[in-house]
Image 1 (cartoon, rainbow, N blue to C red):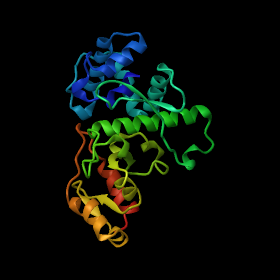
Image 2: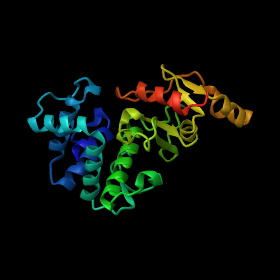
Image 3: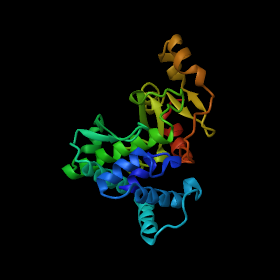
Length: 254
């Protein structure tokens, strides 16, 4: 559960006074200090943070992180499923860690493509839903709850978008390096190949976008950001260059 919680919180707030940590620790029957210590131990193992966390990790912590490195998606989905059960939530409810004041229970609005749900057991579907919710929470968190193109900062208008499509690359479903935080307008434009990012994370517009959108819509929503670099995450989890290269070659319409 701690490993699932870890990327959903900012590194600078992994302390016992954090209301999210206090809320989870209370449900676990543990002290907030012990949970905060576990989170900082994971931070010390995270190569993205270049060992900024505490160095006194246990053999158990290192073993769990090693398992996480080999099957990231499964471990994160399992951890989120455990957190969901810990709080006794219904299937139509999720835990929201984005409010700095504390944990909120919110209605689940996860939509999963039919191709991904086919021939899955109820247990597999639960883990899939929990994994996708984790992906959304973590992506919005590491992008400071802002669209990386426009800076829009309203959570309900933001989407955790995959760079390489999850249906074709299921192993990338919950990989945070395969995600972007985009607005409800720019996410479908990205998924539909109307926009992409170049090697320096600058926005590229498709000629098809320029033909299909009105001049006013282009002027307001796309042209001001063309050629500009996106806002990169607040940790060193930059979008994968391999995933972006795939998007430019196989999704984007030049």
